[in-house]
Length: 328
Image 1: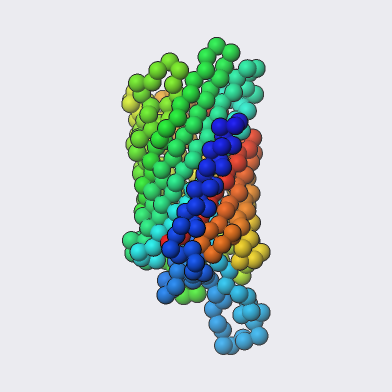
Image 2: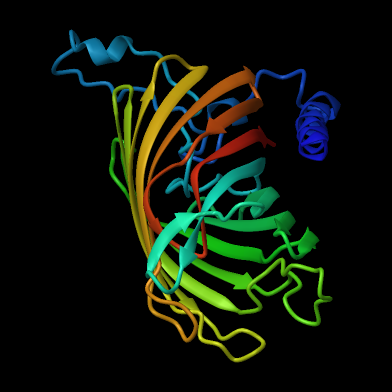
């Protein structure tokens, strides 16, 4: 527990340090990877001001101040970055695993006495605007795992599987409120998964995966609605085991209380097709989240995925995600 607490403190301190060391820290410029409205100032990158309507000047929506930023707190944004700009995001994930799959009963059961499993991760996400319509994304995770049973204890620390992706915006309406983007992504087996010692845990799947996603997004007033649909083709691992393809879908709604405070709720369903070693696994979660802006260029996020139903090797009733967001 002490190690996890210290890691979290270092993680948060790194973001604060990054902010105050930046040459942009003295400028009032911020925003996040969610609405790609190219502006002269990076302070306005993701502002969505109400579109003037001369026919109805009394429309109360005209008095709404731009709400910035308006990113998704969970999931992938549909909005691309303006060309030449960066977003750095980091987050730590602390699952609370308390169930495991029991093959004889084909059901989830509580962890047996004396058994515990921890799989914390610390991920750096980098986004770069190649074009106004095209954004490159790289995710680099550091993983800490520990499995303890009455007979053995195994651990694993190090680099996990790296993800690279391209986000392309296909459509944006004239009011810049409705966006449809597509995502092409790949996962590389950079996390160790073979040649393990008897007390070592794998940090990756050992497979090269690729996938596609469609990401519609709609903003109206202070409300945001987002959808996603993913299909991931998973390769065979180093032992030539077919890990099964993954299908997932999500729907989220967010409300912008102020320019500084956003809350969001997401429903996520994920299913893994039957592979060579496991039955058809699935996951259904409700994911509440909140975001607060500490400074114009720095935000913090709290996400707490709550499991409604699952069938997996290990499952957690809930997880805790702590994240930070910084933009150049």
